[in-house]
Amino acid sequence: MRRALFPAHPGPAYSGLTTWRVVVPAPELPFEPHETWGPGSLWGTQPLKDGRVYAYAAATAPQGGKAPDGEKAELLRRFGDWHDPVPGIIAAAAPKSVLRNDVHHMIRPLPAYHRGRTVLLGDAAHAMAPTLGQGGNQAIEDAIVLAHHTATGLDLGAGLAAYSAERQPRTAAIVRKSAQVARLMSLSGTPAVAVRDALMSTVSRLGPGLVLRTFDGIADWRPPRRTYAAGAQDAHGEPGAHEERPARR
Image (cartoon, rainbow, N blue to C red; front, side):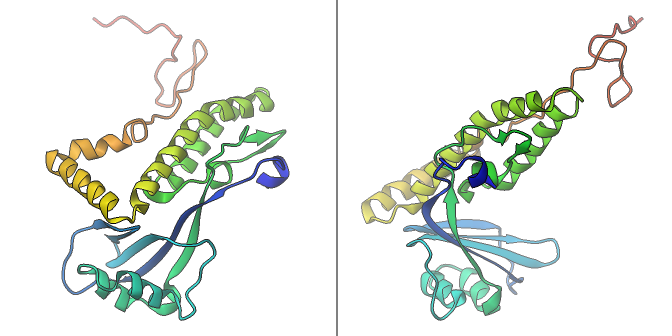
């Protein structure tokens, strides 16, 4: 669909990363959720509410690669000597349950997120590396903003243009920021990895606030507010923005 709307656009580019995902039974020993970075690779583990564990991994690799003996074997080669519980999680995975996907991102933004009456959102509009965990979040934001600009009953073309204008700067910035984190994670040379790890260790010791600064301008997003006509009520039954409120005594 994107190619049909914008045939001159090159589309998403390979980021240099491939990823693996798997869900397994929880290991016998308790553990804390974690994400560990190594030279050109990372591993993350998150417990699920149903008692199972979601694990994800990423590494620099040529595009389109597949392990001839299966992706579980590839995980063992790459991460089998990492800290616990990583080896145990890989061992518990059913071979066919390990998913592998190359990561593509829209490093060159589209000229718009709509054409005519057709609109794009989510990865179709702004595919991004998963390093900030924003792919799904930005799709949800897209849907909220799109609904906001098209629910008024006014001109649909104007609403879609307003959606594109509002979403393009934000999503393009997050695509770039996700790519920057991906490049940082992808470092594999010994000196570069040593500097990266020392910097991250220092920042972590200084306090979680510095780590969370990565999400400045991302996690503080607020949905657009509807403007109500005079005399109207909002969703909570309160007077509209332009309606005079009675004086408090």
